[in-house]
Image 1 (cartoon, rainbow, N blue to C red):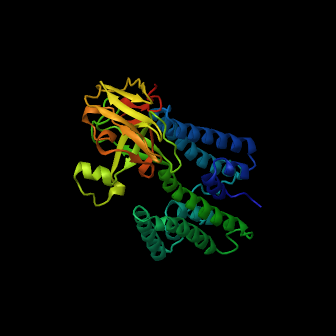
Image 2: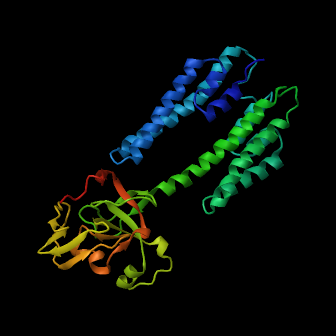
Length: 355
């Protein structure tokens, strides 16, 4: 059975190099796969890791995207050149091709039907697809609509070809349809999952100056099981004691966040006197402060399940010395990196206090 260039394209869209392997160019396929994988892993590490460089991550992801597109084009060329058929169209217009219709459907559901001269059905599918893309931005329940629509449309557009024009073995389109559904759901839900792991937060005040400045954007590792350590910069939700101090009733406390530094963990003894913070009777070495605190705090012990937090701008921060202890259940996660603006990009893990 002759190989099909546009089936190779569809394969390499799923996994770089897969179309080349389908064309029996094994080393070529493995090369494309490894290069693309390395670039995207490097990009993810550069952007998300504390020590990674954002610019480097953007460059690597841009190169990775370019390599991915070249890989798709190359998958087509591997089969096209191998067939060596002068009558074969690179983009099939005169002789419609079922795998090109599937490819068009993957761009936007409905395009494949328009290509096959089913304009009414095609336009309806395009409108539904674009509408579902908007819905998923507001309702996570609709994240699965677009992948399902793409998979169903791809199968339907292939099925509309006569058996003589499509392949007699239709198991290929079944596999493609299942792969479309699986990868579509995975790619749609992955950003949602990632948002549960890593959050982006904006600094609106100078209570953490000079460590954090107004306008800084941070990456925060979210985790319900995160064990805060002394010196960690954390993000937490508003709660009743804090609202009473700020004298503002919040309509949705779960969407109001604050950021401070962990000074005392459960069981720790805290005292502030003569411009120094004492942890278990030892003064903290805090080279990140804007200025020493000009207030006193009598010795106290942090209760179980609570934390004592302070802002680095000690004399301009509403923190535990004003509203008391922070219950653990309100902690969102650990702020570990400034990623914007680029000139202030830095890891926050290094900014820990020592006694």
